[in-house]
Image 1 (cartoon, rainbow, N blue to C red):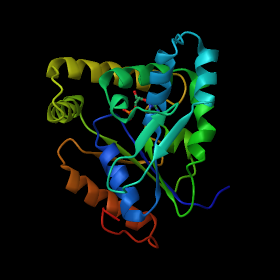
Image 2: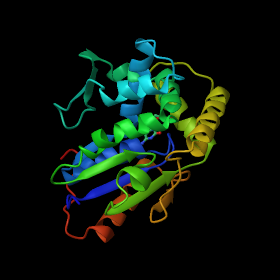
Image 3: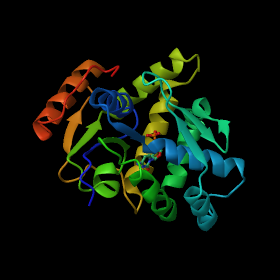
Image 4: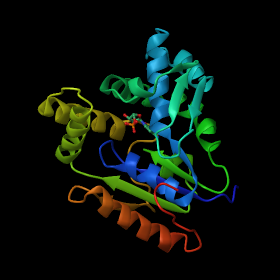
Length: 235
Ligand code: DC
């Protein structure tokens, strides 16, 4: 088993885990796995190639051979993501891609196909892995497992603000409904459902802002890995 340390940060979308885990990886100078992006890529690519979600074998094969490139030029910026040599970074973040991702993520063969690819991100000096099943399935032996959560209403409000800031108009009530629907699908699927690992530390962020969550996470990292150095967020 690899002795490269791993910190897993799981939870539903809107819990703040994307921002928190990316910042934590920067502070540690570690690698970062955005596993949701892989499911989004399979959802997007599958749709572009007209592969039906009911054709589980075909979509799993597509996932296994996914031609993706992550370009991390500026450590402060989000990486550029290329699918089959076309940049898809913006499109991946849309609600449509999130919905497609949630659908393909419920297919056991797709999850299996992405396992090795996710584990390949475990490179020295360490990895922060962001997702739904990082602590339960992909890295069950992680050094620290954090599960971030928040109420569906708070998560919908955060998403609403994010989209509004990007100039995308959405309806808040529809967002709450979508989040509840996606949570139900992610939590009830047969393989790797969205649940905290038994040894995960659950942090409810409903009443916390990002700096407060970041402080709590740093505290947990110092307790679990007393030898690591936490630098400033920009590295
Ligand atoms: O974190 P995200 O919103 O980018 O994830 C998109 C979808 O992918 C989400 O509905 C659940 C799924 N997903 C998953 O099933 N397992 C993961 N490790 C990450 C994401």
